[in-house]
Length: 424
Length: 84
Image 1: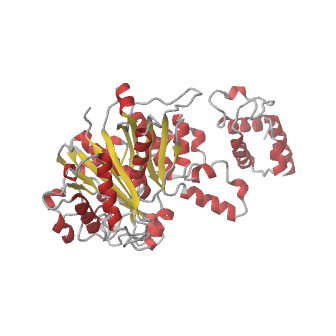
Image 2: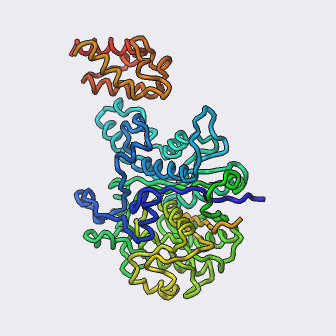
Image 3: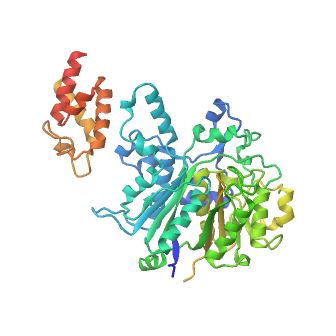
């Protein structure tokens, strides 16, 4: 019998809010975190807007020791440590001070690529025949698992400490991996999340693919337009989100605050067959992923109140909505409410899934449905499937019971997780 | 730069690499970096880079291998500065 798993802590470092309080307020007020980036303009990018968390130096000083700060040049690592440590603190968990680690707590913290700026610094030194000047942390800041390694050491975790990577589904996949490890009894607690670096070296490849919007450089807050008829590509973002997952027994035993229960979920791939490719999803795989997630969670399609979509603001949004509609067998006024959080902070790539999970879960605790920005001109193909009343533009009071969160990534990979308002 | 100034400068460099249970007062000329000051051996390379920057010298591999104590470091710094 699988054990029940609950969420007991959240942390976030997002373009529209660093820290849970600022992020909650930004989500409720529909505050955009997308800003003009002079560096992208200087470098001749087509898209010169992006979502980047505003992290003050004195804030960083309170998360890292002076020694850890020396030569630190990995933005994803900074975002991940802020979100991860915040989630741990939000869950009211102690930091292990003794010599013995906490064998029951682990970390599954994903990323797409880590420490790109540090890597560039290293490449320049190596090319200058100056490899001896790299210092001792060039490896630690650029290995993908650097983020789980840093957090693991800071918190003293002795269970599995690892980093998953599945492009833009990384964060949502991590929630599922953490859930499964606890449900199967291999851990009592998993800090899961994901992070993604900022900057031109991460975002450049997407600009080159011409899948970023180029017409909104003078109107950053309007640039990210999921589900809109005028959607022109996704706005690149960065940051980190983190969740503390815990067995129900463990959470109740220590009197922890509970945000929601993780009922289950599913991850799969379309195998880059049947219309799927490196960059486009196989529709059947997406639909199966959602259906299997419902089965795993033992909930009916009719029970889903809110879907928190992947919805990036590319031409694929109508296809995603169609996939949800087919998988759930629901349409028009019967369609669940829709969240398209990327309208507020862009597509945070590997960090997207976890930042969006944090946002989704905050809707349980604040009893509201966060509004969607920039889709007042709803795409006609979406309007054929979903009644516009199901896509609120403004935040409204609402107490969701069951939410489905999905993320899809390059490589034709999918992840869908089901959250439920907690009832003992 | 006097010898006292050089020692002080080196002490400031080493201080940041000390683990929590070792105080700057524990540093003496005889202190062994890894055995006595409990500095993580991975950080020795960073101390060497900091020494290079602070004294504007360059240390060779054999210098690094000989640098086991604070006194060793001071001797190497002295000899490099004399050559400079």
